[in-house]
Length: 233
Image (cartoon, rainbow, N blue to C red; front, side, top):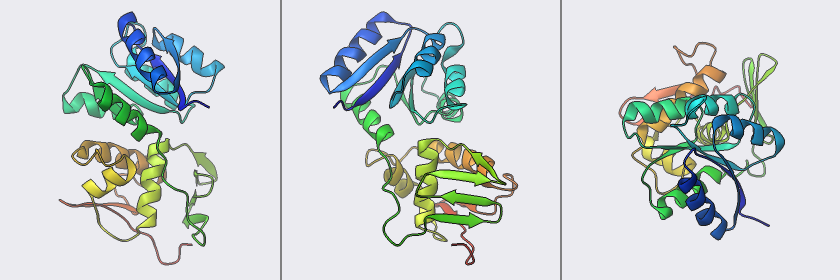
């Protein structure tokens, strides 16, 4: 048994070698790719638990590769970037990444981010509702699926983790820090841009009118609240 299969995507051979050595020594199985095109081919041929994806690469580039992966896969994705501006971080998350790490990074930081990306929220406990129906939206907690107007809406693992946590605490304003630590892990708390991007993505996928949300509500200066109608079950 391995700790998980990781696809490392970077055009720099030295970085690929270092990451392979670091991750295999921690029990991960590692496959590497030199470009976004190679990464997409590898993902078509095999299953991975996580993709470490450099944002600056020749060819289609990291952001476009991330979007291509997200069009058909729920694999966890961490973007590697030398850029540290909020705009660049938001662009990575908006493309579908679960997290990002800024180069140069320490080994403990990278390993912590990988663990955070691979962790899953516990499933609904015994006696909890297996599904929740909100007008034309059905959220299937047991199978981690969302159906909107009769068609499945694909959520990334972290999007579903966030939605599940909000649903487990309905009609309560949950602070940013509590949400971040519950979904991403105890090392998080200040990354409010994560929540802004992920909540916006969830609204696009489940709200009848994302610009005027009915369920996923912002609590100014506090966090977010899921407004669960009393009739839902």
